[in-house]
Length: 445
Image 1 (cartoon, rainbow, N blue to C red):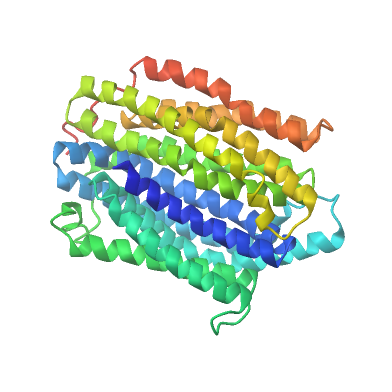
Image 2 (image 1 turned 180 degrees about the horizontal axis):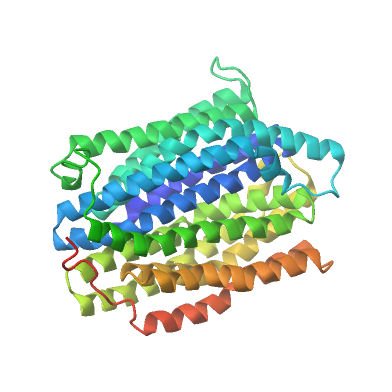
């Protein structure tokens, strides 16, 4: 189950990496402008993931129970919420572009560099706003398709989107293959088209394979959801949606704290994040797999089997992260050379990649703990576990280091990253308590 899920996210992150490298060849200001906007796209993507997380708990257990009608109701719920988020995101990006981008610009940089980065960022954001609707639709469909065990479908859609994005990136950024040379604008256009294609592939497949996706039968014959189920899903969903949004916003706030040390830090972190996101795909998707597999066993009332399976998946996540982190270390010094930027930026990016690689086992464990707690419907606890840790411990540390000390960016980055060890301890005791071992779909319809 997990290999196609990893491949799907891998190719998606690979596209982002290609975008980034190509823009890095055009110039640091273009890359930084797009990087700042992508912080907000990241918040939107994580928020839609949070929007489907609540319904997905029920969807996975309904699937384990063999209740396709219950799954259909969860599909309606997630599609509706994702589209609302897309509209809200589009309005914010359209009318607050100056304010949002300026948050990441340091006064210590030159006026010319600030003006150029702001201009490129606004251009990129004005086009990327068009990607929000297809991204929302894709998230709603892909999440429920994966619950049905059809994980190859989102992977195939992502592969096709990669091919489209790669060709259009090359053509529109550099003016190749008979296309106009549009630079950062071309990168945004290519991404929007690829998102439309990716969503289209999944939607068409689902409606053409109703025997495998029985939840879609009658899904658009109205938009009603039984009141009791809607209320229960809402209660479980709100903490997860808030958690994902606030966690993503927190990560962006931490990035803003780093940016206080200058636009070189923004560029270096952008380079480092690009490659670490690619490698972290393995343990991130293993966490999602935990929620699907364990959730299905809980829905089928195989509680002891669910606990045993979860222990094995936790161990496997850590082992996989150790291997992946070890593979990333040799790449740390080579990857920044692909960018047309200064030596200081490259050296700082290398350092950040090494620190991130060493933190992978911790990140993998806490990620798997989060999805374990979520699989049993303990959304209030997951909210405290994820959001609480980020906003109570990590963000205050980053703010104090950034604004009240002169500590250099390297030790600052290491301290903030390795604060994750505290979350490891919290997660260990939460999972060991078995508070998450619950069947939550009995008698919901």
